[in-house]
Image (cartoon, rainbow, N blue to C red; front, side):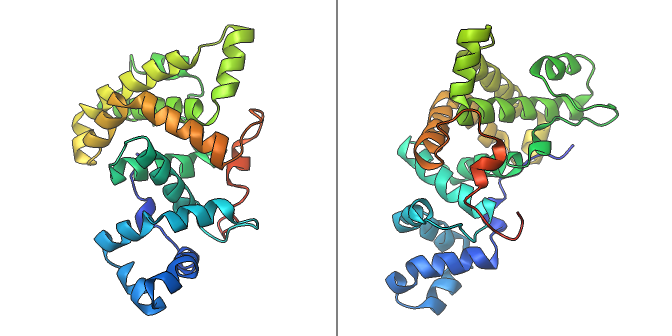
Length: 242
């Protein structure tokens, strides 16, 4: 049971730095200066907010030789800013969720002492009735993350299933995610992992966050076909990890 952390900004690779330098090197005036500035947390965050980086990630025609952590952070940070979600840590956390969930096996809720993963929300919510303190926190964070991921990345699939198969609609996912983030944010482990503020923000602004991710999928990742696999989200990213 691994708790997702807002760690994208500390997992950038040498290829990520090379990409930043290739885009901003001439603008900054000196490659050496820019590389040095990236080593400072405050200036690094300012550099990552540069609109030129955002455009470069979007407009690159060939495969991007960058990490999924860099890719998702730059995109999420910019669409969140447009939606008034200014906290970089929140953007980092959601970007890390997308990076984790780009591997399909990480979308499954694996709880200690249970032989099989919990794949449906019904199974997760049922498991909460007998879960211990730590497992309860983990399940609630997973329900929040999974609700945000599905409603943010696959809204058309949810709408289709709601209209044609009587499945839960987007409002259900919003309420489910909001409620579980709120409970998780009040848990003692949220304070231990420094996630209380992140979860409380996601609970309060779940719909705004979901809509920002809808923009990301519609306008930036070209997920018009709701049948696309999760792997298709990162098909443009050709780092060594993949």
